[in-house]
Amino acid sequence: MKKICINLYDSFVNNIYLEVVKSPVRILPVTFLFLCILGGILLFLPISGTMSFIDALFTSVSGVCVTGLSVSDIATKLSTFGQFTLMLLIQIGGLGIMTISSVIFLLLGKKMSVTYEKNARSMFDAESKEEIKESLYLIFKYTFSLEFIGFMILFLRFSYLNHDFVFGFKQAIFLAVSAFCNAGYALISDNLIPYNSDPFIILTVAFLIIFGGIAPVMAITLPKFLKGERLSPVLTIVFYTTIILLAGGTLLFLISETNGVLSGMSFSDKLLNSFFHSVSARTAGFGSVDLSNISCGSYLTLVFLMIVGGSPGGTAGGIKTTTFAILIITCINIFSGKKNVVRNKEISYETVYKALGLTFVYLSVLTISIMLLVTTQSVSHSKLAFEAVSAMGTVGLSMGATTGLDTFGKIVIILTMFLGRVMPAMIIYYLNSKITEFDLSYPKAKISLT
Image (tube, rainbow, N blue to C red):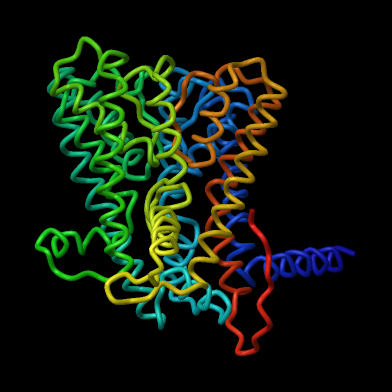
């Protein structure tokens, strides 16, 4: 009987495993779901702090999905063990489950299955197992090098300001990981508001966010871009779109809040904090000012930046800069009667279809999330919508509505954060397997749009 049970168990596990690893569409949600649940259990343990299970699960999902929204003050509700656990969840979530598992396979010297290696090649845009190794090495070297540099700057600054090396070490290592992974968590009850006039801390966090939000290969080619060398179409789109969004977001926030939440600051501090929120809104969720009373202009600016998000290949959320840029370029070229060309390379209709499909599904899920919140929660509708956009974009900026959610509202935000993290990649993988070009043509359908 025992042998039969073992065989049934092995068969059940193997069948599930085989079903999961057949496609990244299954790998991503299943592995992230497992990590979220495991993290929730660990954070619920008495050794981790004093959170209820729903709050622990919320914090775990927010950490794994590198969002940063919180229903509890992690500086006081989590113990040192709990904070360390959350930091690990953020780091693993930022790097990505497939990256971690691929490294384990390679380090143990195990041979990848054909299906798994195919999925890994697709993820890293590699042609062979050796290229996968090189990509993984680049990702880890890039990640830990920048996190270490950020940690050292923050450690020295926090230690100097607080005259406490232990405090400086704890704050710096958590903040460096959280910033690079675009998580938005800080071990300070008021996030970064107490340091909003300190350029060392604000700019260090800002640049960790920027470099974490773009792929390593894109960041490494940054010197070429600054030298004016010719870049590939995708890198050209990423760099110019990022610069425009950063500059535009900074200017709009500065104009909207000069006499608002930035009032009382010097012009240099206003500019510093405007730049920081332009950076943070696109993926990270750190706050250096109180956003609960921002103007309508700032509200719309931050919502727009959160929806666009960061760049593909990094730790950022949103529909991504490339998707946004392709839609804008396509619209401009439609009205000007030109072809979609970037760096003498034409953007295929297949790419445009994917961008449209991703954006439509993304906004549809976001709309459903907002509708569920505003019809069930007794909190300001504008603040609930802001929270939903922040969760969907895995940003973490908050106007204070999260702490006022009931259990159902927390579940809605949990699902929104989870889908915001895994759904864009799942959609692209799905569309890659579905969209094909056919030689067979059909008569053109005449459909009126007016």
